[in-house]
Image (cartoon, rainbow, N blue to C red; front, side):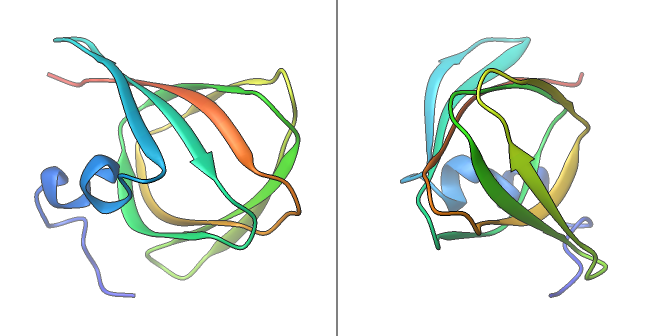
Length: 109
């Protein structure tokens, strides 16, 4: 995996890199709100998210791989509300169910 944090955030925008997974529901000067769906076995290439609040709709299992090669497996729990710091990562659905969440990404100024 190449180092990409030096690239413009626009080049790592999940709307451009994974439009079949990220659907923009609302955007204004403060936030972008996405409906996010990742099917079992599906992998999203390296992308960057701003600081976000995420509401999880259903149980599942995902794996984040960071630019330094570190891999973290996370369990998605239905009804959970999660804070997620700004970061760049690949995401893979390593579970047996769809991952479905609402992501509210805060814009930094």
